[in-house]
Image (cartoon, each protein chain N blue to C red):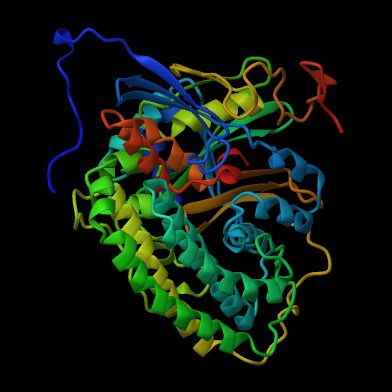
Length: 158
Length: 383
């Protein structure tokens, strides 16, 4: 199925949770989705027989200035089609339902998105930092991040 | 030879307690700085919690302040054992965004250096896996063969392990006059040595006893955890990016995708993953011989390199088949000289996350073999 057909199928099932569809070459096409029904949308993506997205390829977090976004790349091994989903959240309350019970790939990827960008995934069983030390303060990949002067008595910026 | 190795004990009859053991960041068997918190019941592993981040350099943040070609040395240092394969998906992504088509000679050269690096990577994987089991001689033999490959790559690019060789639209240097003969000589030497490794290590009864029926990874668990590369193919799933979505000129070559069949134990155990890597070395030899034969002699490899690399506004996810699995880059660009956001979807990050799932119920020595069969490199896990 092409990206347009997947968008039509999702829109017929979930209505106003699917916000917009952008397809401009040479970029990849992506679908913007609201965060309130996100868990049901992902369950539908994995379990539906004609979509069958059983492989979560990538979960990244992007800082777009006013909003933060989580970008999900999916692939189906049976039908060999791909789709990209984006979820925008406000900066002061970045909460997205966690999909780690659907694809176990999301376990470590969501921990990394929380560590680097500060997006909180509700329902994750163990949302702690993964790459930075456990008592680090701040979210490094945000555009307004200030490097701390020292960490446990060691000088940080060089 | 065919019994399962998982052990179940009736706890109601025993008076014991569990012990927490720290396999610390500095350890000879962890393939880098990885900390494992292992909960043991006697000798049997009941839980493993990996702690990573000891090699975290956050190149994704540095890349936002640099121009596109300046990011390439940072990407080299992710998977420092096979650097040529690392640079390729990043360069491919930018070329797709900018709409650049590279000349034929560059494509063939990229395939040759990528496959040479794939052989070098699998040689280290098999050698260190044997070393984890206690076999020292295959390590010396495979490292000696690897030196021939590194000598060629040093003459091409100037570095033995970290190359900085790919450029947007071409490569950094042209090939030297005796390149094709030397590559064919090395391939001939590798074809002669690899059967010796089969006799010495892989079909050895002690090695089979230590790796067959250990660390069994079922196919649906592998897909759900996002494992790719020899981990997924060792579990019987026929998924290789060079065949399912051919990029560059891989559709012109004749090679087979190697899949684990459970010859010595169950499908998806450590022996299967190892034999997939072994057979992929021979498939890469086939690809290199065909590429050297078909490569055009005329052509300038720098003719398609643009004066200023500035990707238009957009985003792309570009992937390639690395020796360890699928490496992908998600590049977001806003039309300036610097990338807005680069996210590296690293193979070893996903492959390592399956370790707690497949190592419960085995003995502690089996845990070290399972970790060796995943073939991680911490530069990629932590980036």
